[in-house]
Length: 484
Ligand code: SF4
Image (cartoon, rainbow, N blue to C red; front, top):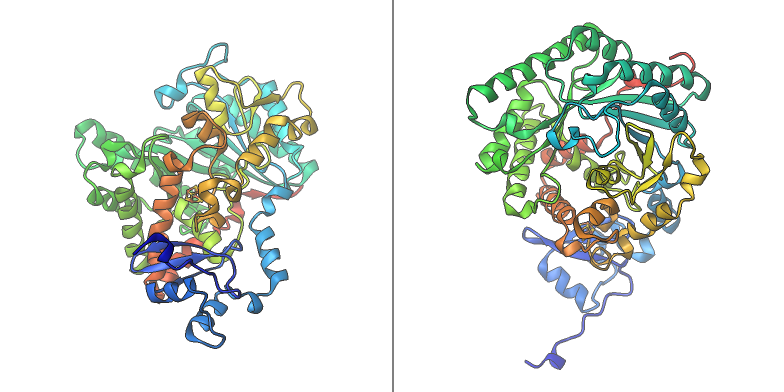
């Protein structure tokens, strides 16, 4: 057959614009409003020929999924489109503060030129004062390092200053400690629990990989002991263990996933045994997830789903973030997968010396001698100056998925986002090239798994995924008013 004899596809006039992708045996269609449906190969063939007969089975299926123009409530669809992006109206809500460069992983602990090892008390106060000027009614102050436990005097000072100052602002304030956790002193744990700080343990997933000898076994035992200490405190306060537990963020280098699917399942079993009900998994930045990592991650999801079907299992946070948009049509609660990106408009990062960056990824580039994403300094910069900074404008435009050549044709665009700072760090361009992008491969791989699970049409599976998609409301950790 000659090329010109091939029929030209004609979309039915009644079909809402869709992008498509084969997922398992069927074809996924998604609309720019985030609505989606699966069709069979034959149904797609009919649609390609412009056939969509009113009242047919296919019409009814697509109409129920809001993919038929005349059956679509346009005002509601537009409202939903903006609901997914409501974060753009709020200002930065997530503020990451590096209180020390000591401790932690070697790369993070290595001080950049001229950067002090610890934040001073007066810089900590300036950071808090600056963050509180955000127009966002919700504010998260995440204290990181290095290892923040190595600089508890400044952590204590910053936290108490934030609580005191927020009496006037009345923002919904959350305080988070990003820590390796192991070896936390009793007095420090008392402080963290008394100030209602969330604890997020940042770890190398290799800790949970099988084997590793006596040294790794000792590290595992120490971590398990400290997680148990935290959980015991929460139980003492009468907090529900399903909501109040140590959250875990794991970076998994190849040593953690070399054993493939079995090690993904073993990882989830180990976390569940510790009582951790929420974890986030990622490969090291820049490592192509298609080289075996995705199998490991998907095996972890499959295991978590299996435990969920049996009654209770941990949720994986990246999957939950996508599901929140896919199933609930809600804006992502975290900053990593927003479009436009969260850079400055959703998040800011502060280094030990008070320099302000568009995000933590932007801040980390400083250690490579690149201050491209520095927006100012808490000592001198005004909030308005920072929000109208030309770098912020450029990052916003560069990160709109629908304006990216590959993303514009991708069915996952309504739920997806890539940090422009990461594209810059790995590809030298804030726009990035999605075909070679590590983040794109990861997001595509995870959403393929999620849609394949949803496409099974199994009510029990759907119920577990819906449970993952619901925001975890931990009111105990929110300091919301002058009464806090
Ligand atoms: S980043 Fe990749 S997965 Fe996400 S919308 Fe773009 S092409 Fe699709």
